[in-house]
Length: 189
Image 1 (cartoon, rainbow, N blue to C red):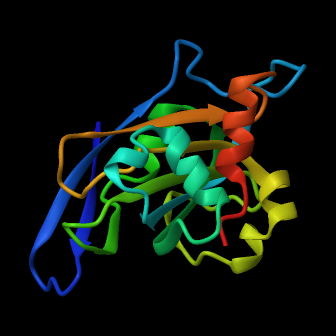
Image 2 (cartoon, rainbow, N blue to C red):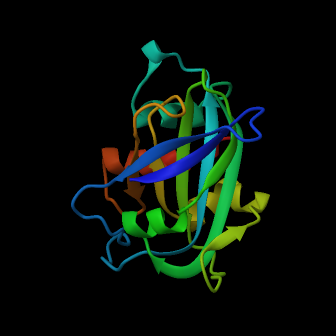
């Protein structure tokens, strides 16, 4: 698990740490469809979405996927990008890329969805560092082309128990896993 620092609204000093537990099945490393070659990435994106889904309406990552794909259910509150060298896509690389991540704008009484994207933009940087998030990276066609992995949390409050974030990859195959990946990378605007 790694901590995600959520700065609550109006906080000059009050910071809540919410631990994220990035989960993936035994395969761990993301591989390309049909080829079996490891997928590469050079950019990570962490996003915090406020959701209007009530506790009775959802508590799984599928609910956050539904939230991202339905207008009016999710509102982007914070986004941070980290650019770095090209590397394989796995849970360890994602944990390392977001060491010390701080997303601002969270409120303790509101539930949020967290989405983490691994992108291959073909523009690696020397070391993992914060970089500007260009809006054109998130255009639907660009996101579908460059995304290598996507992780979603269930709707959760800040600073409640560790939040599981479930990693799916392009190339995870057919059926429910492929549809989870497609739903995760869908345009959320």
